[in-house]
Length: 111
Length: 111
Image (cartoon, rainbow over all chains, first blue to last red; front, side):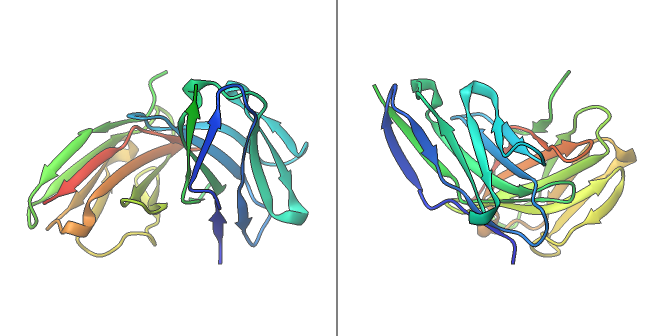
C-alpha cells in the first residue's frame, strides 16, 4: 500500500539551530516527492519537490531535502531555523493523479 | 498570477443541513483536486478532475458528497446532508502537470 510516515508529530528547536524533519514513504513506482508547509491561518505552500536527477533538492526559504532510495526517505533540512519557520510541515508522495500525505510535523521555534 | 481560491473560508452548519464549497483553480490548470483533513488526521485525497471530467473519485467518503466542475473552470463540493464527522478542512488544489498548488482551505464545522 502507498503511504507516507512522518515519525515526529511535534518538534521544538531553538532559533538558529539546525533542523531535520523525517519522512519515509512506501510507493510502488518511482515516486514524485514533495514537502509542503502550512503556516497558521494559511494554505499549503510547496517548499520543494523531487522528480528525478540530483537527489539533493533545494527549495524556498532556505530548505533542502535529500532523496535516499535505499532508505525510502526524503528528509527535510534547514541549517539555521528562523522564528518564522514555526508551522506544520507535510511530506507527500504522488503526482499527477493524487498526493498521499504524511500526518504532518508541527514545528515550534524557541527564541 | 492569482492562486487557488476557496470560498467560504469558514462554514458552521448544523447536522442535516447542506453546504456547498467552491474552488477556483489557477487559470489554465486542467487538473483540479479536492482533499480533506479531519482533525488530527492526514490530509486525504477526495477526487480529481481533468477539465470537467472526474478522473478519480476513489476518495469520496460516501454519496452525501457531490463534486462538480462546470465547464472545466471552478468546482463545487456539496455535502448533503452534513454529518458531524464531515467537520474538517477541505483543500482544493490545481495543477497543469505534476506540481499541485493548494488553496487556503475551507474549515467546515458541523454541530
